[in-house]
Length: 350
Image (cartoon, rainbow, N blue to C red; front, top):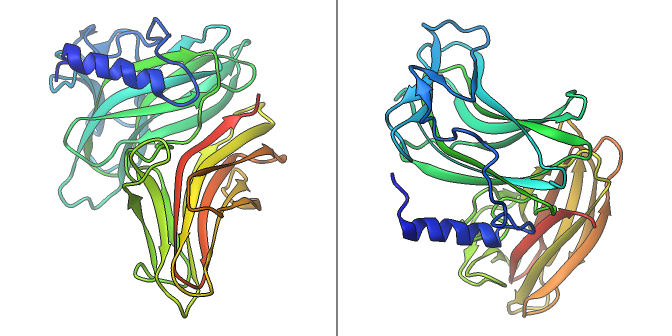
């Protein structure tokens, strides 16, 4: 698929408004040969193929002529159901003032029709310090199971002390799969960005997880409302039960950034109570989790109180051993209530 002038303008406009960082000002894509156009056979210039322990009969990495942009794309094909983690990787240096960068890529996949074994393509990155020492790996995004080209965007905050990055196009698999990647771009910014995906809810429920405890989807509604604080949509939680308590939440978990000790969390919300004397509490909170994703602690910081959109903010000090922060948007109690949440942000504190 070729970019037309109108879609290119739209892409640049989207970059200009993405998160807290200004990526549209970045003049150069830090990735070289991000569309695999410079290739000889299955050798793609600027990229290294890491097959791990698999043989060419079990899986290959190379070039496909099924492309989103131009003539080529990156192809990873597992042809036998063996356990493997394989990837293409490209390393690049970060400009000295970089605090975050945006990763944009397009991808599609084909799996065996029976899907008898799991197979997950995705993109991640690792950080190195100025001595070239590995700091840690951050997984960015799984590719949705679709045979249609889809474009994904992720924002990554750079850990303190990192000077270079390795970007991986990867497949973790015990099944048969063909994954294609194309049009890979990385734009740096000199300001920190919102760590959350789909923070403005304009992509529906993408990246947000609903959880219900001791109630069903008729008692506790969780969906997207056509009513946004800044855009057109928001996350909605509703209670329809006047006899039994509901416990329902939307949540999203993000990896903490190395060296960052505090974060600013903000959200806009409103609540509309129905008839009756009792109404559930609509709250906003956050949880700290360790590397095994076990909860270290949970803290609510806002109770929604008004029928009009209002901001709720807090500054969070990160305790030791924290690897993840989870934002939780909750509705708990008995009665008729609708709560709405929008413009949710987690940003390293200034």
